[in-house]
Amino acid sequence: MNKLGRPVVAPKDFNWTSAEGLFVAGEELARQRSYADALAKFQACLEKEPGHVRALTRVAEIHFRRAEYLKALDYARKALAIDAYDAGANFIYGTISRQLGRAADAKDGFGWAARSMEFRSAAYEQLAEVNVIEKKLERAAEYAQRSLDYNTYNLNSREIQAILLRLAGDRNAAAAALDEILRIDPLSHFVRFERTLLVSSDSGRDAFTSLIRSELPHETYLELAVFYFNLGLTEEAAKVLGLAPSHPLVDYWLAYLWRERDGTKTRQHLQVAEAASPQLVFPHRREDLLVLRWAAANVAGWKTPYYLGLLLWNTGMIEEAKGLFKGLADDPDWAPFYLTRARFLESEGDREGTLADIQKAVKLDEENWRARRAQTEFYEKSGDFERALQSAQTIYRKQPEKPALAMDYAKALLHNGRLEDCLKLLERTNVLPYEGAWEGRDLYRQAHLLSAALSLKNKKYKAAVVSAEKAKLWPERLGVGKPFDVDERLENFILAAAAEKMGDRLQADKLYASVCADTDKFRSSWDSVHLLGAIALKKIGKEEDAVRLFTDWRTARADEDPVFAWASAKYHGDEAKADAVLSRMKSSAGGATWEMGTGDRNFPLVMGIVSVLNQE
Image 1 (cartoon, one colour):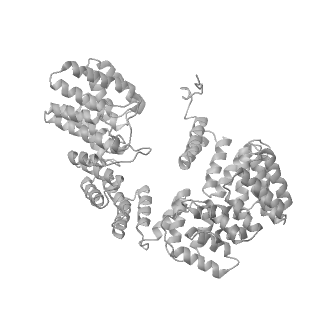
Image 2: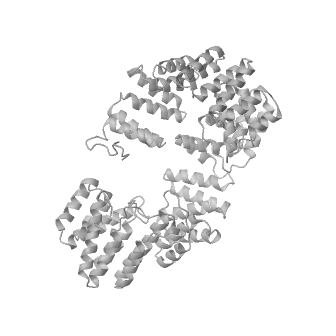
Image 3: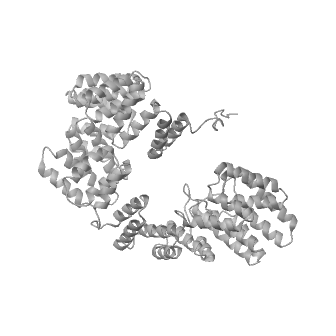
């Protein structure tokens, strides 16, 4: 049997709050590209152990990604001051130094990094690039070959070899080098472009451009142009972009590349970039910062600062992005700008500014479904469920074919107590399956459970059973399949309560036991449903287990968990304390939302079920 022995659970005695534990957590976040969260973990690691070389290196890498080169250099230097031979620290030190134009320091860092097998090929390749920039072509060729000696498939090194052979005028050897790259990477756009430089012809240019067929072709041209730009080969970069399709970022780059050679072309490209539609323009490269900062100082209009703000926001330079977005005031006449700024302002806690920008977006483009969705979401988060319903209904009726709008409308109906209308809407909605497509089925379940609780309240026990049983279903049309382990405590608790009321004690005890079993299975969830588990334990005579459940819950979440505090008060019959906890929840940040800021989407359902029990 091919069963792997790799461990999948961390040792219980591993301290995740230690310096090493925080570093490991940061590494995992960085792998997931959650760089802001990773940075927080690495900095927490350094607070515990300021000399943690790998953490210093990772912080330097993240600041480099953000184009905060001097900050990055500071951390890299600290790492090297502790361990001068650390390969990772030397490599990032070399990378930062190269970016800052400090060639000697770059060579020093890459030279020491090359002593490690892990970094050797990459470090030699970087040394080759530095020598290309310095026009030391023979030395560059030597390093490119050394890089290939340790990794024959290092395509960057092979590309540098081909460029060096072309620059040396050896067309035959350059062509052979390109053929070898194409053998390894048959889809190489670099090869086809280099061939146009070896032999200028319309057929060669067509062979290059005709094979760039992606959804965002301009990105392929930009990526290749930036490669040449980083080698100091600005003429080649301009030639690449001269063949590119029209796009604002292409024009910004061309303006920048021509700025010292042809002022007329520079002005023309800047004007074209500023006049073009900003639709689907998302600058994301570090190198774009240099170009957009320059462009923002050389062209009037709102689009260039907007693009620069997007890029700064993405890289984590929040304060500078904020200044740009706010500085544009109400100048832009494009709805997505206001949606972008609204999202930014929301992250800053400016709810008044958020709503104003969302409403501006809706006013500019009433058919923009994303603007209406943002408006609906804002009202939902504010607890203004009636306005959320109006907003969701308006856009759904105009564009009923969009499942996302149907979900918003169904949620608004649910939160306004229109359970039957919510279920009818879900019955005629088809959601294509996608990762995380849980919302449709969750709304379906919530509507049936709330309906079941209402039937219990009105002593319609058979109707409650029907609704609870329907809540267990997983309709295929709602885009998500039934998982292996399903938490059905809410459904079974309602069924047990209904059976108890109808005099079927045996069935009630069986269902309460099922709730208890699932409470044990999903014990680590520590959510509001545990209150029903505790009540079920008490119902079948296991009150000591119920007490132990609350003890474990307190240990896991501590007393400051408002859901625990409310559930504990409810279980022990302290209604005054439970009401006080609810009052604090409602007045807290996020307290106006459906879940009262708890993040526990079952909380409103549990409250509804418990309120029915209290009335009996």
